Length: 365
Ligand SMILES: C[S@@+](CC[C@H](N)C(=O)[O-])C[C@H]1O[C@@H](n2cnc3c(N)ncnc32)[C@H](O)[C@@H]1O
Image 1 (tube, rainbow, N blue to C red):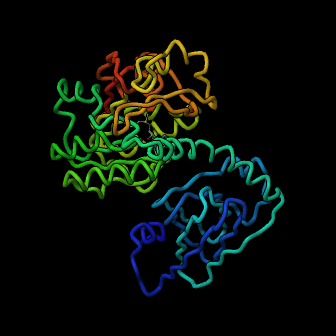
Image 2: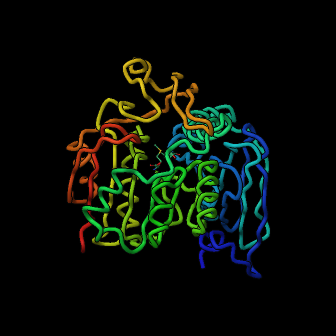
Image 3: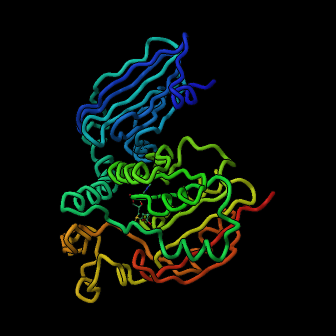
């Protein structure tokens, strides 16, 4: 068994040595090393991990290219010629380390490029991950039970009516948020894995699952850009309901789409519901679009409507980065990765406003 698989499974064995380290803060850069290679997995929080070559001097460009944020349950393996630099993105981030020899070490270090350079790379990326976590936390602190509605997406229900046959086998809900679609599918007896980067939203989804006597074990923290730990050809249906439009960098979108292609079995389907224009128009949380439209700029704070116990209220929330794509542009972008378009429908929902819902299929062979 590879170290990677062993750490994912946390499989105890006589020749494997588990240790655990706490990245304590968001400032210290840690060097993880082992003479015979080792694996590392995030068991609490979120960490930035850089896999570096021992034989090659560190450059800022190489670090920028190799940076990847890891959430709970995500693992990486490196061989004897490599070491890892790690820094916490959340306080109290914990890593599990696994090696064949007992010599895997973790120590705080200073580098050239400097630790400040490393922190600046992590900082820009961590804003993205904090954005979602902060959104859910803030709305709950403001008294909302949910940021999204408890009902499944209207567009999903439409797809189920039109193509019930594609909802079979193993399903993955990408960017599930508080789980409204996953919970509905679970209640209908489907086999669903649900992933998101926000552990606060996932906790809420698990609570809702437990309250409805549904299996909460399929809600896992994973980054849809990387989809680590999922085997190729292992899902029949992937659905991305309003999450791809939260990815604005072309490279990240491409990485996500190609990973979805990998994890789908031949002939499997991919549903995408993506904003097509006038982001925010028609959203439940933006009742007066005309008033806020000039401020729909990432980073600005605008009033958003939330549901609270005794009705509704407006709170100030930061606009997170978003992208808009016409249906044709999406079909072309996703088609580039080998998918064929099965259908494309314009939708207009309280969740995502003016959107396109596309159904794609991976070739059967
Ligand atoms: C607009 S919400 C939609 C949530 C859900 N699909 C629904 O319809 O209610 C977008 C979700 O994508 C998640 N998200 C954004 N980027 C992500 C990433 N890289 N990996 C996993 N989830 C991500 C956010 O945390 C958020 O829950």
